[in-house]
Amino acid sequence: MVEDNKNIKISVVMIDGDFREKVFGANYFSQQTFPDEEYEIIWVDYFDKIHPDILSNPKVKAICLDKKGIYHSSYCFNRGINQARGELIVIPDADLVVLPDFLDRVWELHQTYEKLVVYGYRYDEVQEGILESLDFKELE
Image (cartoon, rainbow, N blue to C red):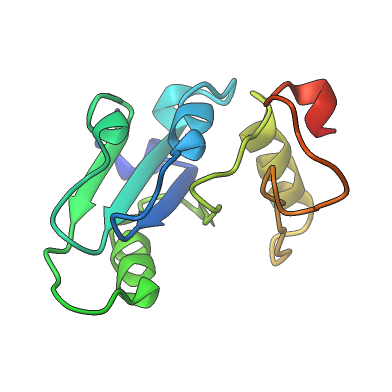
């Protein structure tokens, strides 16, 4: 990704504490139609070990806090926000599954409503039924 702050419009910050079985968010946010040079993905782990799927994803900047003891998400959020270079900071759950145009739509909302806060549901948050797959039709 480009290191020029002027080009970064969106920073996506996700966190972990060495407890994630799935890291859907990093993969789905890496496949956005929003221009690559205009967004960044930051993954912050509280401890000293980054999930292997994150390490193999070249679009994700991984940060280890090397903390010990009890996990506290606020340290992760604060470091990610501090490192973020975008005008808009998106802080999704790291398990979030999003359509390829998610960042395009969030950016459009931001352009219209600069102070709007948006919440994106996780694939398993609404427990109306059991999901058979991560197919977008089923998720909708």
